[in-house]
Structures are given as structure tokens and as C-alpha cells.
Length: 244
Image (cartoon, rainbow, N blue to C red; front, side):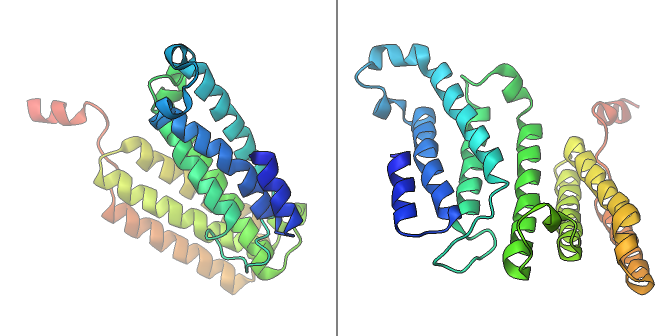
């Protein structure tokens, strides 16, 4: 099915985003069925399928991870349709892959380390997706070439700074509201990365006025969010306070 769908996409002259989606869709569907409806795909070895389910879904999930990583470096053309960030074949299939991967990470047959590191794995995959999507949008919307120079352009670097800052702010707020210190700290690290980027890269490519304005805006944003979304207490802090 994967080969047939890809061949059809090539025959119709569709963009490479469609071709990647054609390869990924059957794999995602098979993994989803194995996770949520194994009886559909168990015959004719239904009696033995439960014993081999763990290895089966692990192999599918491994292929999904390899495909997802490779798709991050694809330009994602959506011809004959115009390119729309996120709402294009490649990035829609990537988002679907992330959701199914998250389901597998919490499955009983997933390796223990995978279940334990599920939040970290999903955060890393989501960050990679957002970064790749930002660079891809710069390529399609700003006409930048899809090669190593796309990441060094002013458009891409500005877009990354904005998107990473928004992710950091959202993580700060959600982590504070839910009392999730790990998420709050991850967002703080991301904001530190944005600051380092402003100091080491953006300062060299922005004029004095824009550079100063960027640092002032960043500082005000961090101050405001730090006030509105303070760090959650450490594990064990609340019981100690109550006991006192």
C-alpha cells in the first residue's frame, strides 16, 4: 500500500509532501490499529498475536520514528495546492505521527524506559517539528532555497526566535498553572536558548535600534511571564510547609 500510494502521487505529479504522506499513512494506520484495535489485524494468527504484539508495535514505532526524522529534512511541497504552514500534507502527517507515537509511548507493551521518558521524548519531537516547520515556512513563503543556507537567513532566524519564545511562554504558563515544575524548567531553558541566540547570532545581523528593541521586548516578556507564572514548588515543599 505504501509503495502503491507513493507511485500514485508521483504519477499525478504531486509535491514531495504528498509522497511522504503517502508513505507514512499506511504505517500510521497499521500502528494505530495494533495499539487500539489489534483484533482487526490479528487474524489468521489471532491466538498468538498477543504474545508477539509488543515486538510488532515496537518495529512499527521504530519505522515511524525513522520516517519522522527523515521527513524533517524534506521541503514538503504541496503542489498543486498552495503551501499553508501546518495545514499541508507533510506537516499534517507529521502531527498525526506525533499523536500515534505518544499513544505508543504510554502503551503497556512499550519498553519501560520509553514510558518513563514519554514527556521528554514528546517534547523533543515536538520541538524538532516546530523548528522544521518554521524553516519550511521560510522556504515556501519567503522564497529561500531549501538547503543549509535556509537556517542562517534573517527571516528564518527571526521566525525561530518568535516561535521558540512563544513555546517558552506557553510552557511557562502551563507548567505554572498545572504545578508541573519539569515543564516550567524546560520552558525556562528554552527561553535561555532564545536569549543566547539573541546575544550570539541576532545581534550581529540586526541594527542597533532593532537589536536594542529585541532585547528590551525579551526582557519585558520574561519579567511579565515570571510574575504571572512563577515556578511551581519543588516536590516535597508543600508537605514540609504544611507540617510547619
